[in-house]
Length: 118
Image (cartoon, rainbow, N blue to C red; front, side):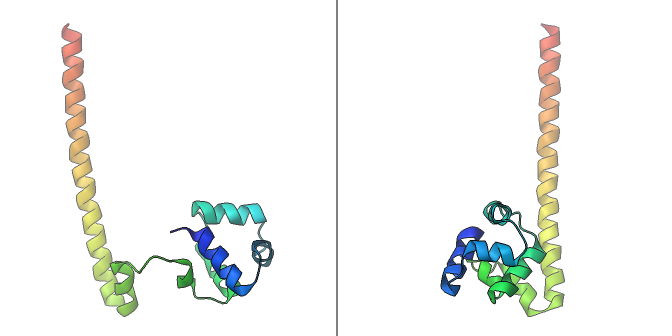
């Protein structure tokens, strides 16, 4: 997702400039450009930008909705189930990474032991 190009396209449709948007948001041109380019823009700034440009915040995301986002629109109960599944998968990934790191530590210890013998 290239947020800067999406905002530029919206501004072009609205016949406005990026400088105008930065001034409306009380941000510097370079600061706003950097936050859009790097993706470090804050949630409240995105909401403000959507309000100023009179678009839905979803307009900034050109990619289709992820399954998790689609579930959150349906009902709050589904959101909890989706978050639980996401956390469960993240935990599984962390356990696998932990096992791999422990294996690397054992290998390192073996290498050190072999080097000290020689």
